[in-house]
Image (cartoon, rainbow, N blue to C red; front, top):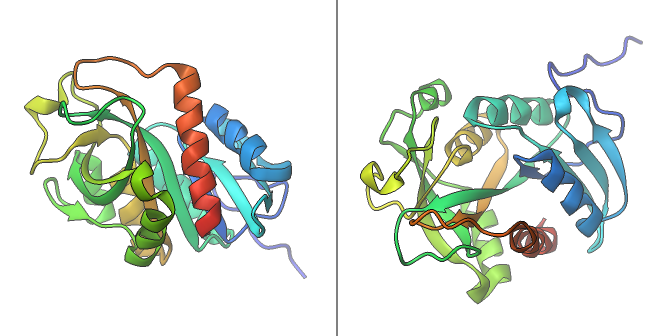
Length: 228
């Protein structure tokens, strides 16, 4: 019997779980694999998109996969993961605040993501239109996070503006690069998807320290493993 064809970009070296955590940064994928998985196995290193699979500390198989930078990369990686059997996914990413009400280090549970880039059209979302996460997955994450996160509308850009307040549509609280792509592509692939974003930069440009960013990612990751 012929072997099943490999996806176009990922080259898995370990089984891919049906549940996945998606992060942009390969370093954050390693961080969360060490935090969330028992004896993590590297499941992909092709194209520098590090991925890890193993048994989550709370039970159940989990894959943690880097998606690279920007919407096109995230959408392509998610399509490969769908070919490999992923059926639920949560993005843990970073964003820049667009208002003084958000402090660096806060967690945002995305309730709506607005397209502010031309590439969104390839996912079936016109600029200015919004896409929502899976409601059941988002509700479960909201219960798990409780007061540790606030729900928010975010806007996804192809190129982050120097000052997102100047272009922020429809009262979006923060800007990022991938959430619209992941939610829209997941919908077309039949994947239940949600997103938690770390406010990594305040509206004044204050950057969150690396250790604080890592700590926030771990908090988000622990919540996700309790839900998936």
